[in-house]
Image 1 (cartoon, rainbow, N blue to C red):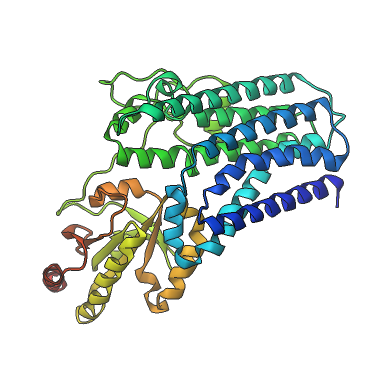
Image 2 (image 1 turned 180 degrees about the vertical axis):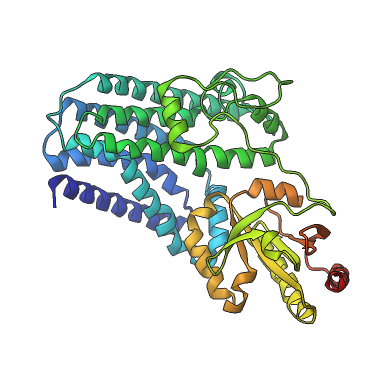
Length: 452
């Protein structure tokens, strides 16, 4: 085993140990949000552990250690200062995982975040293991990007903090850096880590460490940053939808005119933007696509997910030639209404050949981090014969909420849609289980079962 690999494994073990201690505290306080405070501090820990384990430090290594420590401590302080109990993302994950969340969170939240930050911190390991590598022009550019990213992120966070202190309910911050980007703090974060990577490039394996900024930028764009916040704020703040139409999602860019049809502007020629766009393949400027309420007579929009059997699911194609009832739910609280509809449908459909039903939980946000645990729990609680009747949709929550007509993030309803053999919507209902609505549905099913 090489010395570099051993140093890296020791660093990983220390991060997981620290994450475990933080997890113990989170269990006692019922607050998994503590993982967010520990995120930045974990980088600061590795910034100094690696040089200590190697027993030497170079000017390049000292630059990274000081810069990453300043970045991590500031981020932790910022998150801790605004902390007011468990974040709604973790509350959703707690609700989805049920009574097993206390131990599931160790793996899906604390150890997962610890592993991710260890991967992002790989440039620190590369530089600590190669202290004799001379400084170069890439290091100078990287250092400038680190400073620029740090200042951008800190300034954006400060502007947001001041805005929240006096903002009216439903107001949207669209001044300062937030005029040019919907998430300038995340953009600054990404710039900082691309700078860290450039500092490490001249060292052996420095180029391979590009996984660090690529992963960080992907997390910011796709997992816990841009995509998640845009969905949440669009649902809770009507003014945010207009803000999306005129403001770049990530890379700062002059805002569009309000009357201009939304569309991606010309891409900047900056190498950083090209690198992120090419490696991540994401819309750095454009907002999310629109989805419209499903109406009777329309063809069911393409619904893609996974059966509990593990097979890929796609409706209405999979139900072609069969009349199907789709029971959709969006929260843990909607589980019982969905199950109530399913329990009544099973005996009713037994006497109607050419009919079937699907339970479709739509899961997004931080709950997606618990995918393995949630899928396993549903498999254990569902008879194997019905595994092809349960389709889990991971993501696209905003689109499907709009299609189903969901208006409340705390929604407790089942959303029932009947499609005919060609995939056209023939009947819809939303609410708790209702005998009269169920009788109407059975009547519609009998009519479809006799159609040729």
